[in-house]
Amino acid sequence: AAPGGKTLQLASAGWTVTSVDNSQSRIKRLRENLYRTHLKAEVVNADILEWAPTEPADAILIDAPCSATGIFRRHPDVLHRVRPSIIAETAALQARIFARAADWVKPGGTLVYATCSLEPSEGEAQLDAFLAARSDYSIAPVDQSELPTGITPTETGTIRTLPGMLADQGGCDGFFIARLKRS
Image (cartoon, rainbow, N blue to C red):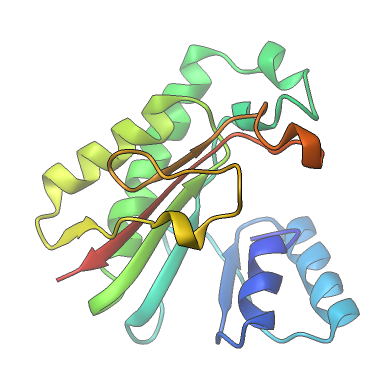
């Protein structure tokens, strides 16, 4: 959840936000950023695989831990640190988080899965495996009108950004984002 970019955006848009992170130092940064911006969110220091909300949510954003291969434009060293074994371990953790968080969404609610990885095993393949296991979820396609100029949805309605995109605006990181609806 930290340093809180997504939390701050959601809170500033008026959402009631609960952010969960298992790192005390990242939680500290998130709380500092909330204080600095005068925004409010419930901040929980917990392992997402052990924590559970008290009631189902209208929407959940999974900002999944990942290999971070999508940030190599700003941090080229990431490509030297990431090994296939790390990607496999991270993908397994993502699958467990994805499955657990899906149970917390109300029927008719939205689940967003996001990762800053260029690895299909952490993005598209993760989504395919989830949808194969969960017939109560389907992709809620992102429309071009919801995206900034220079970013287009994929044929399936997900978003895949690459580090070379938006170069005239300073560039962007590589991300995979899928919006799902629960029946």
